[in-house]
Image (cartoon, rainbow, N blue to C red; front, side):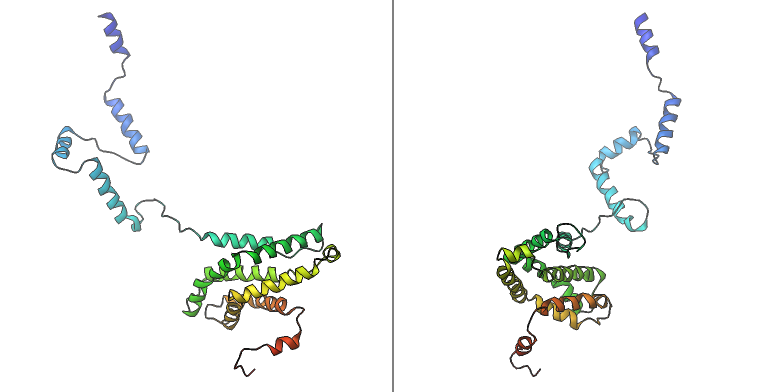
Length: 247
């Protein structure tokens, strides 16, 4: 009997003080949850929604108040297309070599290797296909800032690859000059095959589109045409024209 009495004194009292502490804890958490009495529990078991039904109802209410600012749940963020980041990486990899940097000749050789890799696989076809939606928006006069950023990335990439034309002395000494010139012509043929040249002409014709975004790419388009015609015979360029053209 003595042991039972001592154990009963060691037990934590469950009086009003414990209830007050629990109530304060609920208020600090921002929720004052009402206690469920025995009658309410029996009524819920008799026909009211249980735990699953209450959760579903709560979600429905949460959806209804989502636009009213009544709660602070973050809305899902729209993910950006993954191809944009990959094109951006290619743009940085193909940037022109700084003449004041170290191992300039080695860097130029790396650029030629990257140009050859882009010419051999289907990367150009995939990159050109990214312009389908922006060009569609351009025709519908609904060209957005996101469309402009993507077009800018693609044009910058082709400008960088077209600018890879310098042949170093070690490459000339090893007899690679002819192979590199053939590679440059192959890249141009690939641009025509994938209709990239037609897309560049379309963008140049819509330089004054209503949104005004393409006006920022005047210099970029001029650089592309510069590298396209660099080292070409002007007379041969003038002789090549579409059938039926009066120009």
